[in-house]
Length: 326
Image 1 (cartoon, one colour):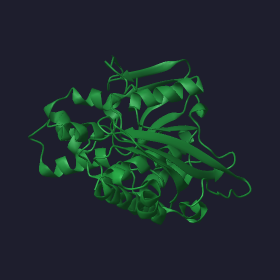
Image 2: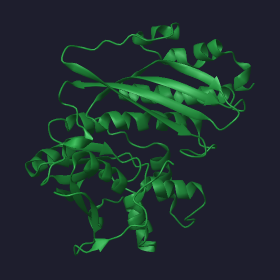
Image 3: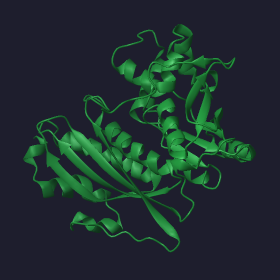
Image 4: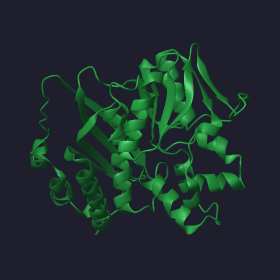
């Protein structure tokens, strides 16, 4: 049975109503109800992923669902917000039937439990083109504690969570590149592309610590450039300081050019932030408590633009700085 054989309301009842929280009203109404406590602000973000662009059509649907949710939760984390709810819109071709939908919904359910969130509603339509999946995530933060891109100051240090470049390698492996990669590294890298870590524990704990923050979606260099532009500052990054996983280091050992490509690669969804020098101890404590690697990779300066340098301080000119949507 194709997805088109299911009526809209049957599809909602069977696959998505079980995911709804109290504010979703059983998905029986056209809108949801969301409470916001005194002194709190709602933080709202929306992102879409497209088959063949942001994920491969043959990717397991449960993992597609988890990636869709996590790329949005990453945006909430980048503002220091705690996730609460989400809205979902799907535009699906008829070839994706009830089994695909059931596995997709199961992936959402798994990550809902992991992150303590629920579905409020959304929309479901058909398309003759590739699948398009759009999600709006809603979080909350104490008023005035939100971390924006525009707060970086000269003298701040630049930090990044986790490791960079894994998602690029994972995508390339799925496309048939690097046939000699070990099985262990292969599984790790593909998982990093398909199911990124949304740093929902780290992000809120950086409120009051970080001056500016963004998640690495378009590429480390491009996204730090967004902070520099919004904050009216410059930054310098040392390429050798950009943290790599053992799997990525093994790839660089075979092809040193990859290190520069990693700095411009997207889809890592790590948190990239600027913080004052006296926050270094607090950041180290957070890293230890959460078990999340956090690495200093550069500094903020007066001026404009972004400089990438080698270990000796000599400038490096990357061919590209990040993913371009258009």
